[in-house]
Length: 246
Ligand code: SF4
Image (tube, rainbow, N blue to C red; front, side, top):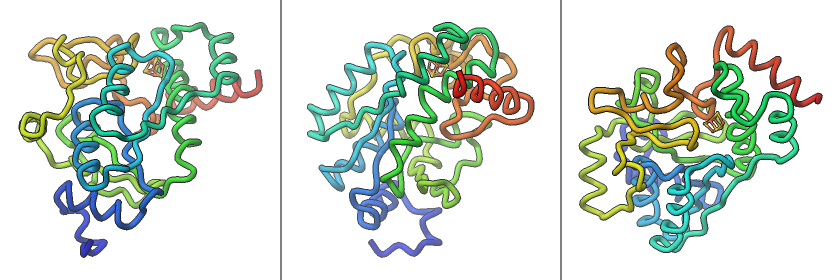
């Protein structure tokens, strides 16, 4: 793929993915939770390489519809979906200390749950990967407004091929290519995560308003793409060390 490293920042999604597949081979993976963005990334990548690696996280709290998407993706694309699970011992200690639904109590506890069910398992799974592609779009939220197409500072390098896509462009691609759609969109969801932490939104609400909907000040992120900051970060560090040493 004849793209210079500097031109990657403005490359179309398919060129960026073709470059990543040619450059990294089996050390490249699409990481997706089967939302519309991730499915479009997966669809483009699978057209370029039918054996592209696909990684997803099973936090243990996913809605049943997401498990059905895993099977649908296997059937439709013929790819093996690598399903990453949290460490049972870590989750067990966290739940023993704080309860199963700790996330409703305060933001640091919610971040703690995301840390042990999402962030750490994915970090471990990506040790044999040099680059990933994810479905981040700048239009999804203020927090994501500055997302680059390629984050060279991340380990592994993080590609967001749809960073500059609008929701309309995304939906047009899905319709044109008959990309499978997560069933919860038909029930009013505009962003989909774990079952207890996601709800449908009203027409006038922001795209990610249904994520951790009980939080008013928080940034609607889980730590996979943006770290906690300030007081939340400090409290989270303490909570993590308590679980690790329990
Ligand atoms: S989204 Fe909710 S249930 Fe899922 S890992 Fe984060 S806090 Fe836990």
